[in-house]
Amino acid sequence: MTSSRALRSVTSRSVACCFAVIFGLLRTADPRAAAPTVQFRPPQRDYILACGGCHGLNGISNAALVPSLKGLVGYYLYLPEGRAYLPRLPNVAFSTLNDEQLAAVLNYMVFDIGAGSAPAGARAYGSAEVGRWRKQPLTEVTLSEYRRRLVETLINEYHAPAALRGYIATTAQ
Ligand code: HEC
Image 1 (cartoon, rainbow, N blue to C red):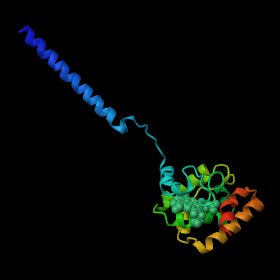
Image 2 (tube, protein in one colour):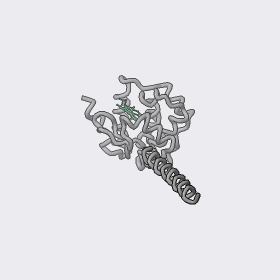
Image 3 (tube, protein in one colour):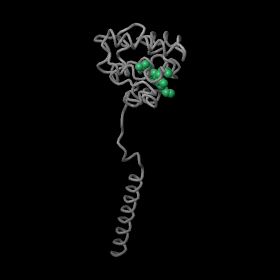
Image 4 (tube, helix red, strand yellow):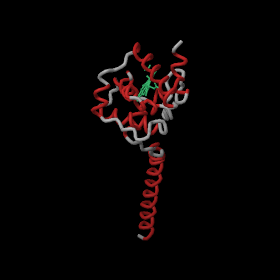
């Protein structure tokens, strides 16, 4: 009697123990349980997915192939044609993001990635404005001359660094 009760309690204890071990193993086997969770705000997430592959997660790219954005891209907002240039770029205009999401990505790009380069008090892009400009995309033919004129004006008259030339300097020849 006593010994069978003792046996039962030993058995149930080892079953419980066994479950705890298996459960523990399953938990540690699940990579999601151990991986730290990184939270991105939607515009940063959209930038990473739609733009970061070419322009770099932080806006630093191989500038000979794709223009670097970090600390530079805000200069375009000094000129009305520069402000229009960003939503008219083919990779921006034809993005699958809707106008609102795209405006948020452009604002993240200009004010976070391009921090320090936009003029003081520059207005954020609105979705209606982005919606209008993306319907007039620049083409491969019009883009390089449009960009060259913008960049030279920004360097000569708005103190933009010569680094803004980077991409065109290597592609213009
Ligand atoms: C497939 C690669 C690729 C993707 C994706 C891409 N871009 Fe670009 N981007 C380029 C290239 C190449 C240029 C140079 C101009 C051109 O050929 O379109 C450029 C030019 C730019 C410029 C102009 C910078 C300057 O100094 O002239 C900006 C701003 C820009 N892209 C923003 C974006 C944003 C925002 C997205 C995402 C919505 C994006 N790009 C997605 C390749 C890409």
